[in-house]
Image (tube, rainbow, N blue to C red; front, top):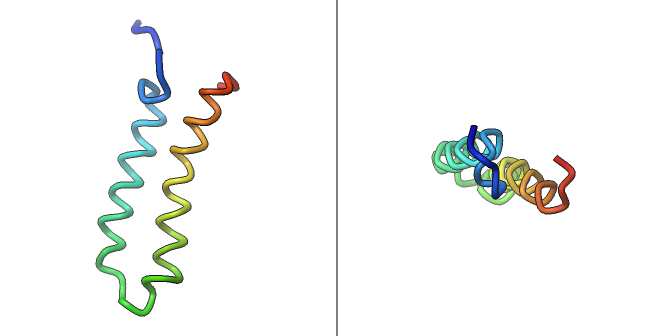
Length: 62
C-alpha cells in the first residue's frame, strides 16, 4: 500500500477532480442565456467538492 502524501493521492479527490472537469466540458454546451446563472453555479459546486477534500486533508481531518 502506497503512503498518502498529498490530497492528490486520495482516490476520492482524483474522482471528484475528474468529474468536475467532465462537468465543466459538458456545461460548455449549455445555452448562452444560462452561462452566468445555472452554468456558473454548477461549475462552482462541482469544483468545491475537490477543494473541500484538499482543505480537509491539509487540516488532517480525513
